[in-house]
Image (cartoon, rainbow, N blue to C red; front, side, top):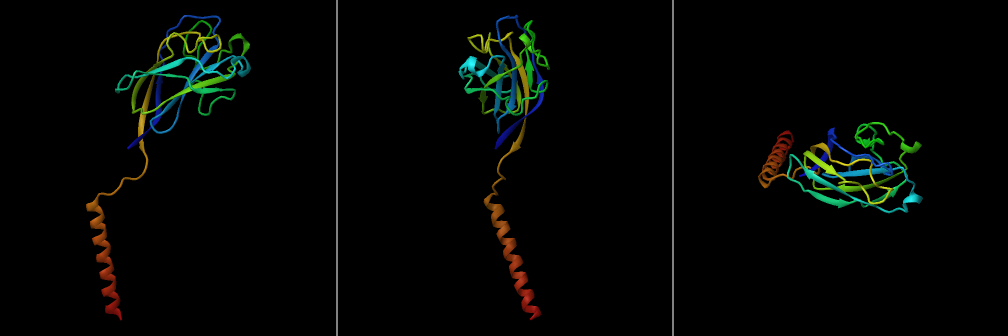
Length: 194
């Protein structure tokens, strides 16, 4: 059966050192379908400054479930529209210019807001606790370099979804016998009335 990941609780534990030249200042995640989660980082740079290029990797490791560690490069190309489902303070959080994370409100460092987002999706997940990290940074250039580093943790809860269960052969036989019995009963009744 497939599991659909629902977000029940979020606990971020980040420790960082400020990097004044860094411009990635948000990290969030959304449900990406059965057993999948997409993580997004946001930068103060524009698409023109970025050139539409992905940078960096994200590592996801199961804490209470056997998963990973799996390190995957950001592969959802940068976009200038905030991805659907990212809600500040709920599943999207920010670094402040002193390197601390998480914060619920965009500090608009340098007087700017988040202009672009890049993402990466992880699949094959079950309910449980996961830790994730960009390592020392979410990218190698100023566009995606983070204001702090560390690890975060997210708790996911699985709800069973998918197609209805297929009946066993014995169930089909019993159903068939019941329908045949009803048919015979109805036929006899019609004959008795006629």
